[in-house]
Length: 271
Image 1: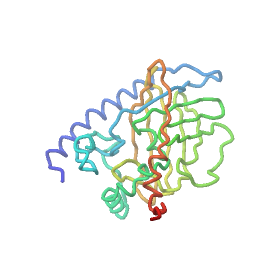
Image 2 (image 1 turned 120 degrees about the vertical axis):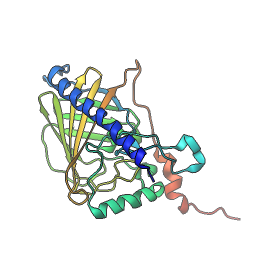
Image 3 (image 1 turned 90 degrees about the horizontal axis):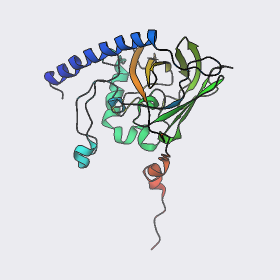
Image 4 (image 1 turned 60 degrees about the vertical axis):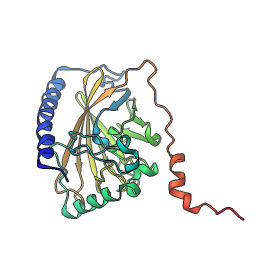
């Protein structure tokens, strides 16, 4: 259990960081203008990556032992200021209890362990690069983990034809900002390794704003009346990968999870 001192350190440390980010984002949105595509829209194409501990827990958290004690410090959870504005997710009472159960059973319940698609917005802050490919009618986001793909429909927008892991995304431009509205989730993805989750009623509104040639401000508002008492927001910077040969590498994690998922079905060798 966290001490009062630990909680105080996390909260007080988060305040100046959140204030600085809000001031910087407001200034950047009014001063920076991204390069343009052929149709005159901000060009967000490139390979990007978030640098944040939200992968482990989107809420502020102290360092902790990992779920596999045998790994020692190599499997420990690093401390993080979190990316949830206001600090905590506004769970409904029953959902808060489910989150607790998720955390206690995360080694068997976390969809990431089985190489299922990470969902939205979790894919945006996993510790792997992803690529944005931009055209006038579609914007594609290709992720390293499980080769997940998102297609943002800028034209010919429709409702989700079926529920899915990554959801169905429709986008539009508001000045320098790409706004993406995503719904149609299957309710089976988590938000992080700490068991934070949502239902199939989730709706996510994301905002991507270039704040410099190599930085994006990412903001997302999550609304889910089955799980949360009110909408809530996350925000973080995303950085361009600047290596000369920056590219997405193969991470076909299915082969690493096959034995975990199907090992019990293996036939026993004959005598």
